[in-house]
Image (cartoon, rainbow, N blue to C red):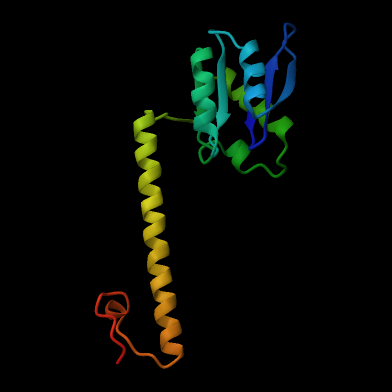
Length: 159
């Protein structure tokens, strides 16, 4: 399947072996409708996106397996000259059938939460440093000379 922020397109084979497709909204109703067609024998493959873990959590109890694809190692989609949902889903389906999809291991929920918190911490720390550098630059531009450490300390003296 090709997962987007507001919809997803699935590809599957019908009784005759032909590739069929169906698009669902990525909301509660769309997920419910999609889960109704799934069986415990189904294997679902989806490329990693921001919402892939949420999708995984919703779908994995209803199927045999959910494979999360590593797009960096799946060059057919990653480096495709024409991004087309129809072609992408067909490629995913064919490589799924051949058991040749480069997968990402799904970490436990606790690990995902910790990773998210740590990423946010790093981002905030980087932003804090950039903000301090900008304030120090503005002060210098206006003839206020303070050491970087003093500008953001209790001391905060202007020299």
